[in-house]
Length: 177
Image (cartoon, rainbow, N blue to C red):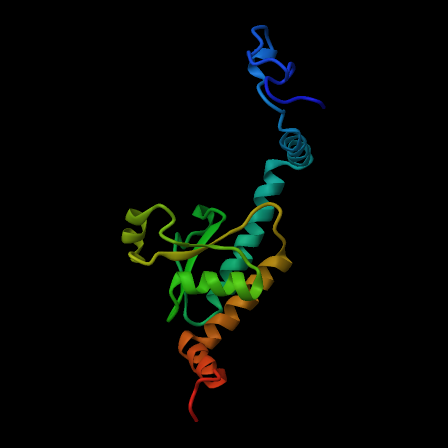
């Protein structure tokens, strides 16, 4: 594709007046169009029920795993039929931002932390002003990825920030013995 500027007449400073060219400024987002096509083909190859069942399996596995980790509090409905595929939680002794940073830097796991643009909701669930850690499960996630997240969270919860600080102080070259 050789386009740009006005889309079909890149040498012109004027936008074309005829349809459809008057609506096609600049270079088409070819990568975006291809990605949209691939996404639609994928979604058309699965039923909505398949996708929902897969996500429910993953969320249930995540919730069961979180419940088994001492010091983890999960927020949201206890009735799993009322849950969505976002799971907010906190780890006792850790701020949400600390958990998110460790997951990112040590395990390359991306979560969202804080108030999630909903401070009023966090006031209701009792996590204001720090918020929570939010793991989101999607149709492309796998049980292996959920297990990896749970393994990382077990390590974080078992270590605790005070233990991390002590380990850091012992290994610091400026620590006097």
